[in-house]
Structures are given as structure tokens and as C-alpha cells.
Image (cartoon, rainbow, N blue to C red; front, side, top):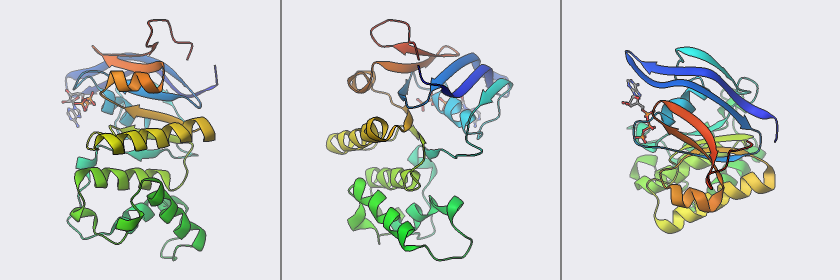
Length: 224
Ligand SMILES: Nc1ncnc2c1ncn2[C@@H]1O[C@H](COP(=O)(O)OP(=O)(O)OP(=O)(O)O)[C@@H](O)[C@H]1O
């Protein structure tokens, strides 16, 4: 087993009086491709957002490396739909804001990284369009490109393929698998389709009934 890159110890997440997750203990190994599955409302998004520090935890402790090395994060796309006519290129450039000097133009390497990230998702030809004129699936691909442009070690995606057609879903998942297998990236991804998740990996994080645990799909205990 690789070293854990994220450790949750006795974590409780609650909104007001509703306790969504009770006592979560997880050790997520570096370099894993880990789908998070479970029923609607079971707390998958809350758990991932708590790891990112975006949702406060009521009890327990979460250790992550995100202060030193921020994760690439793709939220559920419907939370981002700017009225301001921002372009596809500008959305992806936002992914470089942590490494970019304020008000400085992009370096040629950064410009290339933006084009490359869009090319990988088959979206380079739409670079000059405004984000709001894209379809749901195209928006999703642009947000994935934004998360990947900085080449983060850890990628966290909340249903990255929910609005994609079958071919695009296949392409995006294949791209993520390549990043995992060839480049050693850790990929955590909410995905509803357990069957499809099972074609990608034999280890998942199952969330439900207030719990979250890493399990082998064939029923064995995960050594992760
Ligand atoms: N900001 C919030 N304020 C209050 N309750 C919330 C908030 N965010 C989530 N919840 C509640 O927490 C529970 C878990 O929600 P969460 O979105 O984490 O589940 P999920 O497993 O990701 O669901 P889905 O599969 O539908 O996306 C739900 O009952 C939801 O209503």
C-alpha cells in the first residue's frame, strides 16, 4: 500500500441538526484511482468538499497536503454559470491563478498549457467562445480542463461526466485513467454508475448510512 495522501480520522459532517456522516475513518493511498459511490444525499460531495476545506467538519480530523499542493477540483458544473461573458480560454486560465503573478500576462509556457489542457478534452476549437454559450457537457469539459491545466498531483472531481454523452464520458474517463496510470496522479471522483466504475478499478469508496469506507468490488477487504 502507498502512503496515505489523505487521512480522515473520526470525521463527522453535519448541517445544523442533520448529521450526514458520523465517524468516517479513511486512509486514501497516494496514486489511487478512487470512485466515490452511494445514494443521492449520502454525503459524497460533502466529504470531498470537507477534504478540500470547503465544508467545516463538526468532529474529527482530516489530514491533506492541500495547503502546500492544492488539488485540481471540478465541482458539479451547475454551481458555475457566470452571467459575465467570460471566455472559455479565461475560464481555463483561472486554473493558473495560484502560480500567476497578479496583472502579469501569461508566459508562453502558461499559454501553451491552456491550449494543451483544452486539446486533451477536445475543446481547443471552442477557446474563444463565451462559457455561457456552451452546452452543459461542453461546460463540464472546460471545467475539467481548468482543474488539470496546472497539472496537480491530486484531482478531485464531482460527477465529472454527468452531462456528457457516452463517447465524451469514455474519453474523459480514459484521460483520467491515463493521468493516474502513466503520471501517478491520485484521482478521487464521485460517480453514480457503479458498473462503469467497476470497469475502471476494483476499489471504490462506498458512502451511505452515515459511513464511508474503501472496499473491493469483489467483496474482499480493501488493502487501500
Ligand atoms: N450547504 C448545505 N446546507 C444544508 N444541507 C446540506 C448542504 N449541502 C448538503 N446538504 C445536505 O447534506 C446531505 C448530503 O448532501 P451531499 O450533496 O453531500 O450528498 P451527495 O451524496 O453528494 O448527493 P448527490 O448524489 O445527490 O449529489 C443532503 O441531505 C443534503 O441536503
